[in-house]
Image 1 (cartoon, rainbow, N blue to C red):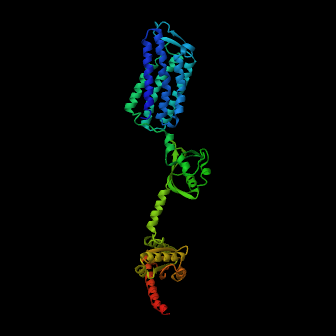
Image 2 (image 1 turned 180 degrees about the vertical axis):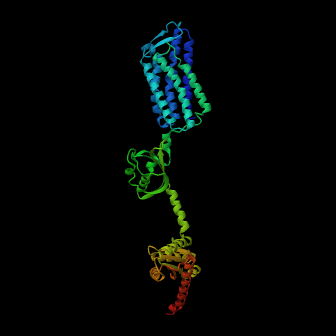
Image 3 (image 1 turned 60 degrees about the horizontal axis):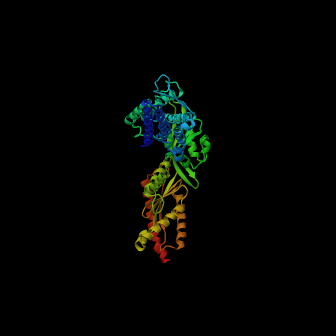
Length: 485
């Protein structure tokens, strides 16, 4: 379990410390008391580093747990232990050891040397750093985690208060009750393990969560400055420089749509298209206002998600839903929807609207004689000629088979006949290329909706179809004459 190894090792060191202290107290011989006090440093020197390592692991500061960092943590504890074992040669751990007065040699008084004070300062620094890290993480945690942190902090506080009383000389001479206080540590840890699952449900550090999110997060204060940004947001915006502390409007000037969202500073969601090099990305931008418990505005939080793949899929689905696959023009459903919309505009504006019903001549003959592949080529060629003849306002759709519909706003039926001339000119050019075993030709029918005589879409298309049929009959009638000539 996360932190389980270091916690177990720390409690083993505590047990060793307490066991040696027990033997030191029950022994009567002076030499044996000093012996047990000496080997007690195996536990004394180990507890603080193990506590700090447990803190880092439990609070998910794993990036600090590199092997060389852990090795550095053990330099002073190991040196302290070696100094204690060799104290008779240098007296750096204890300058002297004497019997506490009036206690029948039951307790010894140690005059601590510089090594002990260095180890105490080092150990207290690690304990303080770990405790601060716990408190800092606890303040950002949900209720269950707060109870976990509170339990662990309670477990570590009592023995170190007792130890501080002992080394400062404020307590009874020669009496160190730190091992007794470790009983409370064990009780707190047992309670936390059973009641609050301190190793089963381990919190995830806020900065790790922030850094590892796949979505970009941007935090801006009330003055418009960037106060936090995670790596994902830097990647989405295509920048690697440190932007914390800079004004958001300055950093995002390349992306005016996102900058506009920041200026709006309101809760909501919008999709923003930003250009990255020669391509582009769609960014789903979600905005949330940050307020204090008292309702004071603190800034804004922006969640950025790359939805380019989704947008492209939506575009493809929209294209399939609205476009004729063979020719690339609008399909019947989309074409009639465009016509309905234009007719509504005609009713409000009073402008003319013309439609052209175009039907490919002899498509069935080409299909029967040359096959449907050549028939499809005929349809594509005619569609290209129709598209090249459109005005900017016009719309073209394939109704199905060999039938096309051209929608021409702000145009009367008489004016629309100029379109027929452009199409026939384009078809003549294509036929002149001579790369197909057939001739392309189209029959046309025109109808118009004028102010004061509104027409429905179906009625308008039906009238244009009738006119197209007349034109086709006329062309068939003229065909034999042309052949004789």
